[in-house]
Length: 139
Image (cartoon, rainbow, N blue to C red):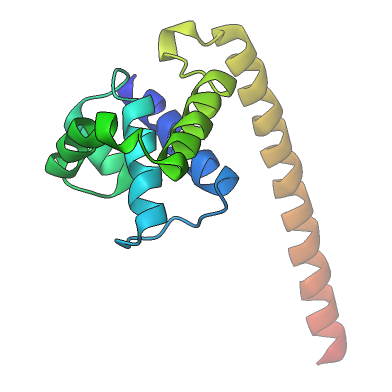
């Protein structure tokens, strides 16, 4: 499922920004444009131009511009550093396809979550019962 992969790339973008000491902002400040460009170039073979644009909150033409400027931006120390960080993130957090995810572990996780939901429902019922008793007592 492609949405699963794109969600992982969005997390990678956030991890890249965090490691660079930046927040996820829509601004034209140099450090942010370089960080977005570095991310785009680190992940350019993992997604389409439009998908990358959506992940960074920009139009696909911004992605094209970042790709075209990559070579010349490598002359700048701050861009090389941002690109190095983006590549490190790409290696640390590989993008898994939905097919590569172990379905048995997902089934186990779903069972655990369903058990937790059942337990929470019991606590909710107990809370509502106690609340009703308290309201009757205090009336």
